Image (cartoon, rainbow, N blue to C red):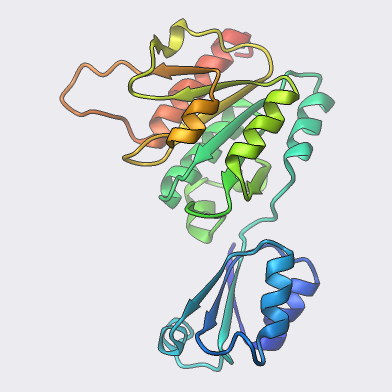
Length: 245
């Protein structure tokens, strides 16, 4: 499960030891002083740092000493995108990866991880910023799937998509205005499935990177489905087309 680490020495040693950290909260006005080494290590490891008022840290740590810094450790370690590709090749299968563009609800991410595990997809990619990380709430919502699904956390989704396209993956995005209903699209072969965030869908730049956009037919009054529900429908259509059931 995720853990809050408070204090300069505990946070510094967690960083030095390579522990997966989701983000660091540091008190304003301390960046050039005692926390300089911690902030330097965080930058080296591309860990987001948020500057906050000291009173906010006091509230989070319930009055216990924090020395101006708190870190949030991930519920599970992240992997590299190459690790996900290697896992697919080790199983003798075309890579099937789900990329999530700014999913902010931990219950949605947990549910998607559960579906990815059940369907036998090879892994998930999330952005480092503007997205929920592998928190304890995500772990609970995943019903244990967080322990089995490789998750890569990347700094630049656009660059990651371009690199995967160069490796031969076909990029399919879910979009309400997509020209094809999802079951009409060819979803076999090496595949990157892109699911957008709650309420706003896939971002403009990411949408432009997709090779194909597909939609889920909506006959009712509600304009869209929950992100985890949409992901489940699309993931299992891939399973159906690949004949993996």
